[in-house]
Image (cartoon, rainbow, N blue to C red; front, side):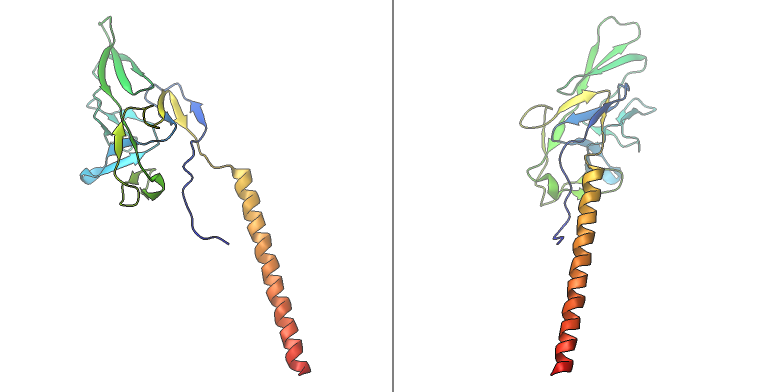
Length: 189
């Protein structure tokens, strides 16, 4: 019988996109985002873009924290596994370090409150966010030019659903059979 529902916290398959602003976490952790109203949100969806004023933002336009400001004239952006962001600007020979993307981890990620658009909120059940460098203290590494796919195995879920459906049918037939037996017993007595 189904007791409760929980989020599966395993990492989904990573796929290469070739977009330098697409980031995936290869392991546990969440990117931090400034939600409207000043709330801190957490997400594993790393399909980021550059806003009109040069900030690294989500597709909804929410700024990534800590803020990363991409200079005008940037020809290429390099983001290392530990989140260090370097920009090569037109006319300059060396890449300039412009910031570092940190990763949030939680004592109980299953306790995070789900919002729309793949965002999560910290709760008492999740514990406070532990902010740190990617790849340290159990946090996943950042993979540039990749996105994380779904971690749900469709075939497995369909088989589980069919099993649950069959178990329900059998139980239903058993209840009908017992009901019939009791009816016969009442008529006999």
